[in-house]
Length: 166
Image 1 (spheres, helix red, strand yellow):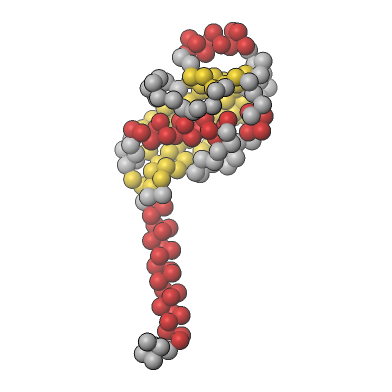
Image 2: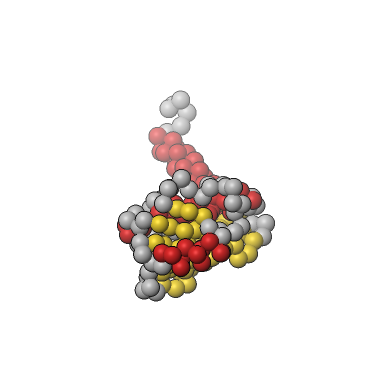
C-alpha cells in the first residue's frame, strides 16, 4: 500500500483523522442534552461525596475544607427535592434531616464536631437545573455555592460561583 501513497500523505491522513476525532470529541462536550429527573439525585449525591469523601465533581475544584470534613463526627443534610427514601450516601456519619429535625439537631449539637449542609433546588429547565449548596461547620466557617448542572455527552457537569465564605 505504501506504493500508492508516499509517506508524507500517510502522515497527512493521520493528522487529519486525529483532528476530526478531536473536533468531534470537543463538540460533544459542549452539546447540551436534556436533563433527567435522576440527574438531580445524582447531583445531590455528588455534592455530598465532594464534601465528605473528597470525590471530584465534574466542573468543580477540590473542596477547600475536605480534610477537616473527614474528621467531623456528625453531618446533617437537608435536601427536600430528593425523595426521603433515596439515600444520598452510605457514609454512616451523614444523616438526612427535615427542616424541623435540623433545628432540633442544631439545638442539641450546635457546632460541636457537627456540620450542617443544605442543598436547595433553585430553578430547573429542560437543559439545566440550579442548586444552592451551603455548608456551615462553625461560627466562623461556612461556604455557599450556586451550581448550574447540565448534561452533555460526557455526563453531568457543574459550573459554580462561590457566593460567600465566612
